[in-house]
Image 1 (tube, rainbow, N blue to C red):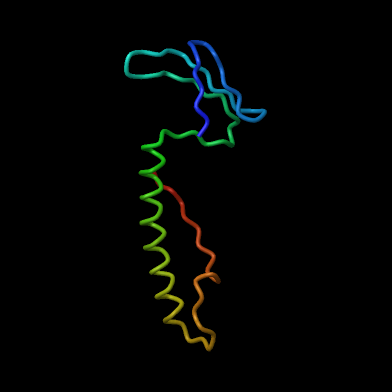
Image 2: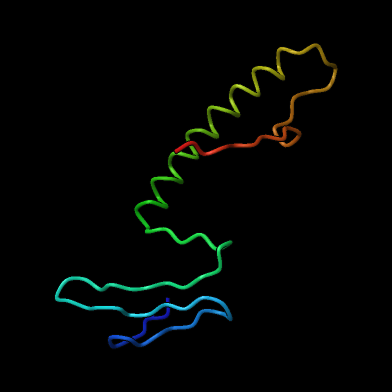
Amino acid sequence: MLVLTRKRSEKIHIGDNIVIKVIKSGRNSVKIGIEAPDNVRVLRAELYEARSESTALETEGVEETAAAVVASEDTDEPYHRSKLNLSLVAVS
């Protein structure tokens, strides 16, 4: 992990298209601004972790359902998880 010290209004560049700017710092917190392209998702860690846990649970349920459907079909070919094309859609 790279650790940097920055003062108010100072910036950090990540690559060519991401800029992090210190907006305000206080006793127990730091307010930062992040400039990034629209295709780069920026999430707070607690939201990212909650979303990852939720997605893992949804994926597990979808895979189990898909396995049951595939196993119930009349085929001579054995079931392989890698042959399924599963798509998940997040609903907010």
